[in-house]
Length: 157
Image (cartoon, rainbow, N blue to C red; front, side, top):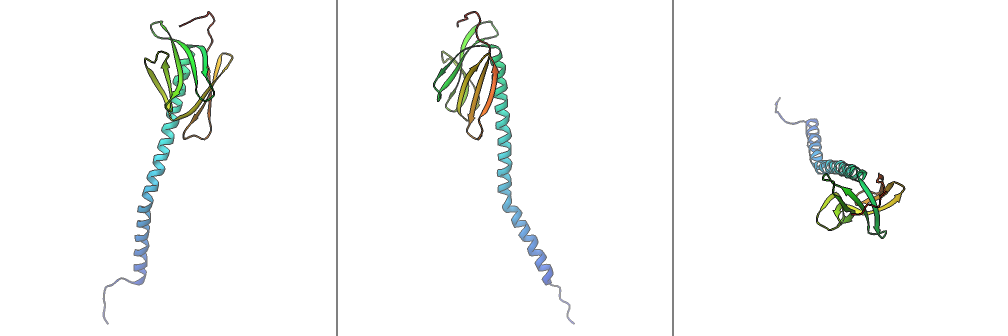
C-alpha cells in the first residue's frame, strides 16, 4: 500500500472555512472604523455642546440682559457684561456662518462657542433667557434656560 501525505476532504473544507472567515473579518474593518469614528464624533460633539452651554451659562450669570434683536430667522441676544477691570461692555450672542459666537457690538472681536448651528432663538421669561438651539447633526432642538437679570438702575454701555 502506498502512503501518500495529502490533504483530506475534511481538512480542505476546514481550511476553506478559516480562509472565508479571515476574508470576512478583513471586509468588516472599514465598517468598524466608520462606526468607531461616528461614536467618537458623537461624544466629541456632545462634549463641545455641553462645554459651550456651560461657558455661556457662566458668562450670562455675570451679565445684564439688554435686548433680543432680530427676527425669528436671525436673532441675537444683547447683554451688558462687566469684565475683570470693572468695565461694562455690550455683547451679542448670535450665529454667524453656522457658528454660535459671543461678539462685541463694535465687531472688534468674537469668541466662537459652538459650530454646526442651524438656528438659534432667544426668549425672555422673567430673569431667565430661554434658548432654543438647532444643530446640524442633531434631530431634536436643544432647550436651555439661562439666568440673566435685567438692569435695575438703567445701566447703559
